[in-house]
Picture (tube, rainbow, N blue to C red):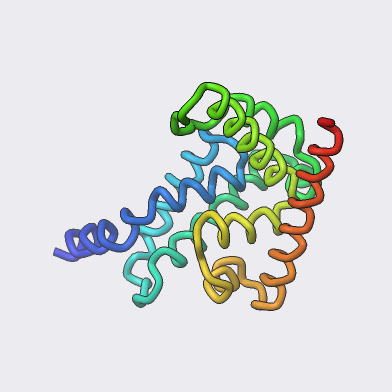
Length: 183
């Protein structure tokens, strides 16, 4: 039966990469619940289009679908100004204040320092403009190469490289500024 073939293909192509799709959606929406909605929509789109998947990099294919689903979701559920604003501080701080699970360190002090450093990094990444944050997350969190990022974001490789360089510079500057202010 064709539906069984589609289901089997979906399981082998999409399901292994759901965690990556969720991570990308989480970074793009800035909210765990919204990310779940985006991934659900991306899975529906992927299932509908599974016959059109010609092989190749299944992860990049799913992340492209997830990216499109996220931007569709954002355009329907958030004002367009929110998508292009450099500073999403308030929304991101609320989400970051909920925290992320961290592994226990040797001492409580080390765990506290690690959590503070991770929160500072998360906050700095969240403050990046969406195109920079997206490129950085796809490269440094998801581990995609430049060609795959260009494929997912539909921009030239040179643009990917430029966005990554600019994102990293902004990230370093933001963290350095926080360090200076902390002293």
